[in-house]
Amino acid sequence: MREYGQSFTVKPTPINGCDVYFAKLIPDHRGFFSEIFSSQRYPFPVRQINCSHSHANVFRGIHTGIAFNKVVTCVKGSIIDYCVDLREDSNTYKTIVSQRLTEENFHQLIIPAGCGHGFFAEKDSVVVYGQCATYQPNGETTHCYKDLGIQLPVVNVILSEKDSCE
Image (cartoon, rainbow, N blue to C red; front, side, top):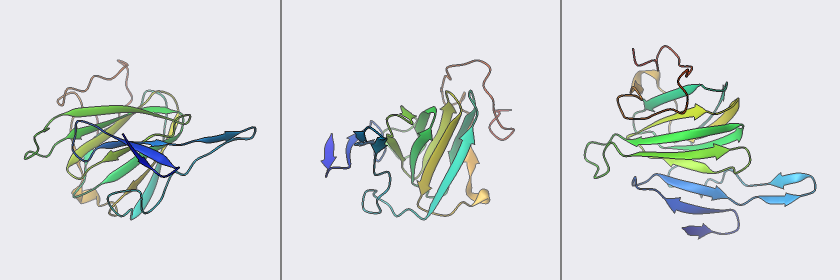
């Protein structure tokens, strides 16, 4: 694990470029304070920041974008975030990393370009993610989570038509 000043530590995962950032929370009687974004923290520039709300048992993904790096944070609720190495030339091709991101821990997961991303909402959740390029709907590909070997923690998962594996 690497320390970066007072604001966070970084733990690498088995996928090259997919790291977990552990935010340092500064608690007091009012709650806590934490830095969740710094342009100097990430190994890529953040060009767009998105926010999604998902009800409990929703799965979003697995999506890949053209040369998209992402940083993912759960600011409300709890999710299981997934990174799947879909870079055919990678020595960790088809490796899956999952990380629980919650409103209590403020962890972040870095999704490197060429890797698939998706998440399962364990309860109603709000996810904020920054990405290195603006969204291009024509540049996104959806991969069936079942075909990649991802087993979700519930049977009655809620999916969009795009994510339905049909």
